[in-house]
Length: 316
Ligand code: UDP
Image (cartoon, protein in one colour):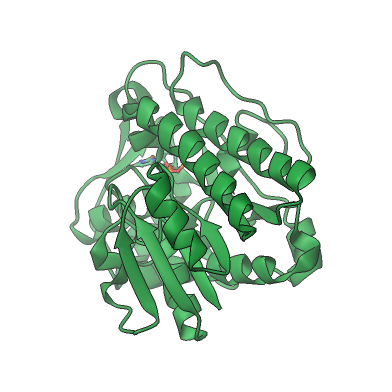
């Protein structure tokens, strides 16, 4: 099969490309290299991989490449809380206009699209577990963190509208915190940052009081699920959470990283305003309900937190 991955030079996109090439698919990557990098795909030595530098905002480039493939994994987006807070305009433009372009051209060419959304859309919900039909509780527009969630909510609505009105086959996934080899800490992602700090015996920078918690899913589990969902007819027009259910506070995460790297690092606490700028709002807990995806494709994450840290510490 010929497959397009928008954002294929990014962290998740490059793991997906590697997985698809290994399974003998021809993979076409479109990436503007704004946060992705050629380093991420340099390890994929295969004539099945094709790279094109370009933006999803460029309709001509998009039209040509979509014409040459069978299906599309749409991952290209501005991601990472730090990046989003710093570039709210680019976030809205790329994530809304870019996705609109992908869906419009996919519809014209009648190509199936898997859209990657985010657990961030659940916003400030206080529920124990987030499931796909829950209300989405977003903070005020004056706090730019929420521009990311809002852009992805619009993307989901657009995709569902194309499905309902035009019968375009779309699958929507909400990715919870995804981690693994090759992930950069540059845009704020906590796991690669803590592991790097620990390996260098530097202070571990905890934002806020560290009582906020997250569930970290190994990227290999995520790309496996993406392919399985793309292949299932029943997934069309549906939304699926993808994530690990092992919940850990950021304090515990720091302790586990320090222990598993035998580091001398100490934890330090940095106020949110210092880390992200004035008026930042934190999400205190985010656990996925994975019943829906589990029922369809038997999804369970195979790597627990310690196994993930072990893998990542050898690649940083
Ligand atoms: N975080 C932290 N120190 C860092 C980077 C992040 O304490 O150096 C915290 C961050 O405030 C959040 C959690 O770790 O509570 C996860 O952050 P990340 O940016 O990885 O993902 P997200 O906030 O999107 O869940």
